[in-house]
Amino acid sequence: MLGSTLLTRVVIITAIVSVACLGIAAAIGLAAGGFSPRRVGRTGTTVDERRTLPVAGVDLVSIDSVSDDVRIVERQGDAIEAWLHGTVSATSPDAIPHLSADLRGNTADIRLERKRPFTFGFSWNDLILEVSVPRGYKGKLYAKSVSASIDVAEHAFSGLALTTTSGSMRTASVSAADFSAHTTSGDLTAAAVKAERSDISSVSGGVRVKSLTGDLTAHTVSGSMAITYASVPGRLDAESTSGDVTIHLPTDASFTLDAHSTSGDVTCKFPIVVAESRTGGGNHVLAGKVGSGDGRFTVRTVSGDVRIEP
Image (cartoon, rainbow, N blue to C red):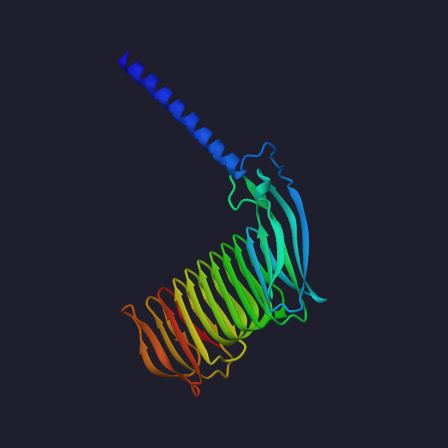
């Protein structure tokens, strides 16, 4: 009898706690707009929004996106155009993004906004935010995305800065005095970058630049790095944790190399005059000069190989 009474009490208490939790969850959901009486079907809701801003006086285009891929393209004309299109499905209409584009001083500010930044419930989308910049635009462009990719078509900027979190990054042939690209949980692939200075970093993602001009600072964590130079830079500083570093240079390259790897090989396929060379014991070093030693290259890896190749 005692066991039966105790079991009954446990069942009653469990039921009361469950009802209370459901009530709290429902209240939070209603407050957040996450529980909608009408569930949007899998076919989704079509989104097609456009905003146009004059390019006159603009020296910076700033783009901010969450969960929606960004494409930056070049166009004819004298206006900046933002186009959000695709389909979206969500249990709450508050989760559907809306396009915002405004001029703030000399900045064209383009972003996606939601009525509530956080909502409960299911949602998915294949939305794309496409930003077209006039062919004659020579200012800066900064783009940031979270849980979305960034693609940049061929264009010449005065400055280009790209940041992604949980999204890949791709560029066609781009040029800028200063180029920066930073990814977290996403790869960076660039067809060509012509810049005076480049600053590249990746966490849990690889970096591949098929043609690079100018000085470079690069860092990867849990990702490999492969850089092909169109011309020999004056300075290269590359560092990797748990990833290989491969640098391809013109056959007539001239540079001074200082390369270290903790648990990987260091090789240079150029005719190098060796100043220091050590292998084994957790310290692999290769330092020396190729040609007249004009370029200054410093390469460091913890768990990965270093390769300097034509």
